[in-house]
Image 1 (cartoon, rainbow, N blue to C red):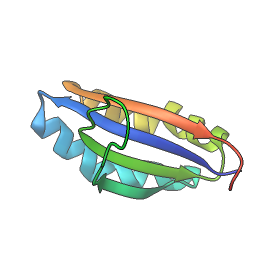
Image 2: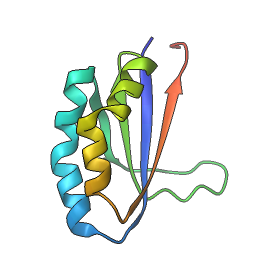
Image 3: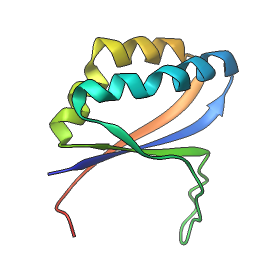
Image 4: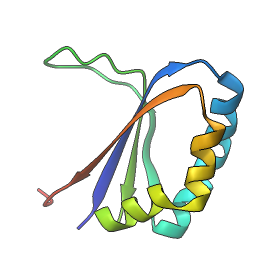
Length: 97
């Protein structure tokens, strides 16, 4: 069952690290079957108080693939590169339509 990961950049105190993170992020997804579904999406909050920053949505074949990507050495290296960037990552798993 496909899984989605929502990424939301909340604050950037390290623009150079964020640029490096963005440059290398896609290559960390491929070994886990992941891809950017949306990158830098325009967001229209229809209800609630959510204040999104820079939003991306990743797609994986399953939640387990997404978890393996997140825990991978390749991605964890990028977590260190983007120090000073506050990022929210949320995994969604459920049944399709």
